[in-house]
Every structure is written in structure tokens, then in C-alpha cells.
Length: 222
Image 1 (cartoon, one colour):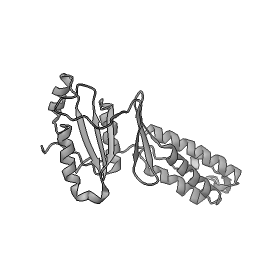
Image 2 (cartoon, rainbow, N blue to C red):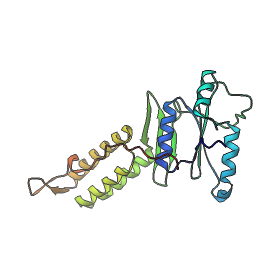
Image 3 (spheres, rainbow, N blue to C red):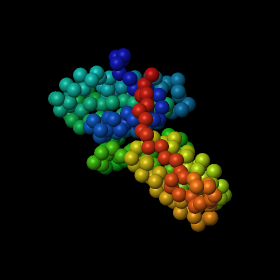
């Protein structure tokens, strides 16, 4: 394979970043699959077969020429056992065996599971949007509520701060605000107090919860 073609992303954040970048460039169609964990020694071989199958080993200039001719470009990515194949609109060349099921980001969101607790929802509407999947959002909400019931303001702040480990995309940030409002409302119901700047105690407010709004660019490949 050509040296300039890199496909092994170094983290789930890099996978997410690449997906958003490619989707924004017109790679609307995707196929997500998992490689067998018990055959890790075969993963490199499978990579080569799939890259060859979809002719995704192209330089930037080859992709531009294909686009100009109305030919679909394919992109292959892998993070650990997760494989994601994307392609643009355009003619599918005869030498490509197009037999995998591809979905369209504009109509079918991609659910990227990065751990047992966290699944992200990615969809292209007017722009690419990333949010927590419903199950993940509910998991955070339940965990926060359980912490609120302890009436320990420091633990509540600590638990909420865990959300700052997530990338600060606008959709996720919006959900964090919703969770913060939920925490404040439930904290008031349970009589939770926290230290006031002026001294003494006061009700917990959103201002007492830490928000990381900076979206960091991460390294994609080694």
C-alpha cells in the first residue's frame, strides 16, 4: 500500500474527528462493522483486503480527479476492532464489489460505541452534529441523580465534571447544559447547599458546575 494512505486512527476521538471531517467533505455513505476480537492477528490482513476491495488507497490528487469525473471515492478507517468505510456520491466503478450495506448520514445516524457506557450519535443534517445517544444520556442523568441524592455538593460537582472528558461539540454541549439544569433542579428539591462566594451557604446553581467548552483537535494517526 502507498505510504501516504493512513487508516489506523490512534483513538476514538480521532475516529470521531475523521468521521466529522470526511462527512463534511461529502462522504455521506457509511458502513460500520467490527473485526473479530479473537482474530486480532488477522486484522492487518483484513485491512488490506478491504482497502483493496474498495480501492480506497488513493492520494489527495487521485481523489480530486475521481470526483471531477463523477466517480465515488471510498475511505477506510479503523480504530481497534471497529472498521468504518465511507464513500461519496458518484459512480461506483465496476472493479469495486459493492456488496456491503451502506447507510446515509443524512437519513440514518451513525451510532459509534466507544465503551460499555458511552455511545455517540453522529448525523448530517444542515451540518454534522454529534450528540450522546439516548441510552448514554440517560446513563449520565441517572448517575447524576444518584449523586444528588447524597446531598454532597463536592461529589455532585465531581460527578458533573466527568462530562468534560467528552469532546465539546455543540450537540454534546447542549446536552450538558440540559443535564446541568436537571442537576440544579434536583439539588434544590433535595436541599443541597454549597459554598457561596460571599461566604456561608447557598443553593447549587449552574455557575457552580464546571463546563469545558474548548474543542481540542487531536492527533489522527501515528
